[in-house]
Image 1 (tube, rainbow, N blue to C red):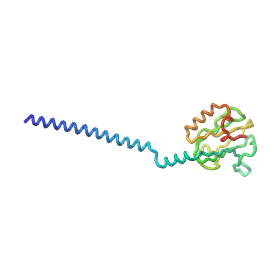
Image 2 (image 1 turned 180 degrees about the horizontal axis):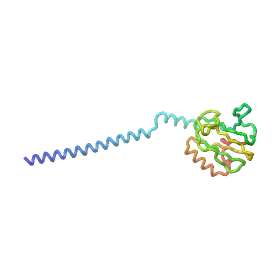
Image 3 (image 1 turned 90 degrees about the horizontal axis):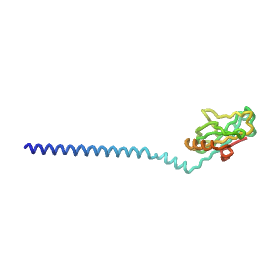
Image 4 (image 1 turned 60 degrees about the vertical axis):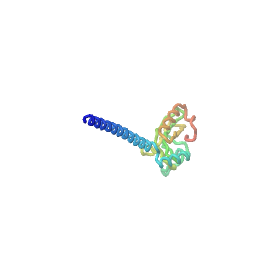
Length: 184
């Protein structure tokens, strides 16, 4: 009888070992299945993101950029004459898509310098550039005989940073396309 008990005990141990192994394998399989589901969920864009990317890819970015000055009624109007020393000018922008922009200036055909880096411009018409929650103004200096301002634009801040770096390799702003540049 001891042989029968020994055989039964060995069979029970074998069954427990098989049960433990299959349970562990099943738990690993379930964990991998859940992990793959979470990864698929996280990496798949939602319907709103898909729709926005389709719309953004179909619509070209239109940007209008102009220099403005205050008139006698303290309203911003298009720059009509060469500003005098001490006078403030600003910049008005219209865009159909949100943009990240940087403003570069080049007074008297000297070396270009950055006036501000990476501000976000929401879509809209005839907006004065706003920097640090205030309208951005440039005060004309006595030495400013001829100044060119160029707006570097991109939909993404990383792309903007690359464009600024490539622009800094240029000697003058005249090497940039005139589409986003204004001067007096």
